[in-house]
Figure 1 (cartoon, rainbow, N blue to C red):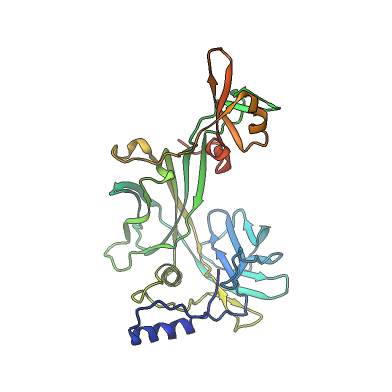
Figure 2: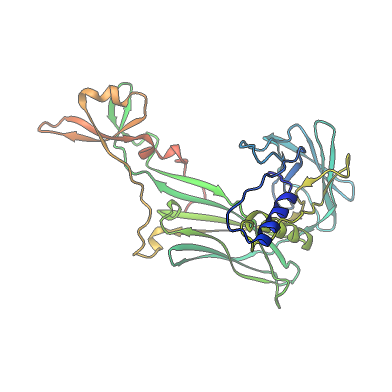
Length: 380
C-alpha cells in the first residue's frame, strides 16, 4: 500500500475548479518519509487465520511493498487466552484454527523485530449467516455473478465478500509429439498433459453490502463481478468460490471509506480522499499511523460453475490464436533444441515416414507456463 500526502492535491483541485481551467495538470505529490505498518487480514473464528504485515512505500517505488518479517503476532482474548501465529514468508503469519468464542472479545498484538509494539482494539466475534445463493446471468456481452444472503435473526446488516476464481483453459495447439533426447517421439499417456490447464485468481476489490436501510436483513442480487464474453475465463469452464463475512458497523464504515478512496477517485465529481480511522494502534508511539482494520468473524462459502456450453450460442467465445511453423527433418535438432519451439504434428510426403513437423512457440502449446495441469479436487 502506498501513502501520499493529499493536502497538496486537494488544494490544486480546488484551484482548478475555481479557475475553470480545462488543461490537465499533474501537481507534485509530497512523499511521506514515514513507512507505516500495514495490517492485512482478519481473525477467522471457524478456520485458518492469515495476517500479513507490510510497510507502506513511496509512490515512486515500483517494487512490491516491503514485508514486516520476524515479528511476534499473537491473538489475545479479554479472558487472557493467547494464540501465537507462525510466519510462513513475506510478512505472512498464520494460525490453523483459532478457538474463538462469540462470548468473548479478541485483539491482535504485534511486536516487530525492532521492538515496536502494536495492538488492535478488542473486537466482538460476528457470526455470518449462510450464503443463500450465488448465481450468474448472461447479460449483454458479460457474464454477471450475483450473491444473495439473508439473516433470519436480523443480527448481521453489514456484509463483506471475497472470492476465488478458477477457470479451465486450453492452448492454441494440441501437441501430438514431444522432443526428447535429441529426437521427436509421439506423446504417451504417461507424459505430462500440456493442452488443458487450470488457472486461479483472488478478488482485489472491496465488496461490501448493507441491509440497514431495508425492512429485513437481506442482500438481494449483489453483483460481485462481470466477466466479458470474450474472456479466457469463460472459454471452457469457470468456477467461483464466494466467501461471506459479517461485519460490525465500524468495520463496514472503514471498508466503505477505503472503497471510495481506492476505487472512486479520478474526476471532479468523485468523493475526495478521506482519512481512514484504524482500530489498530501503536503502543510505542500513539501518534504513529497504522493502516488496517481488525475484525473477527466466521466465514460462509458457496461455489458455483459456469460452463461455456450454457452461454448464448451467438457469443464468439475466446479461443487462443498462434502462428504455426514448419520444421523439416534435417532441421529438427537445431530448431527444437532449447525447448522454445515445440513439435505439434507430423508432415508427410509420399512415404509413411514424416518429412518434417508443424511447430509452435511453447506458450502456444504448453499450458503449464500459465497454469497447472493438476485438476482441482473440487472440479466437476
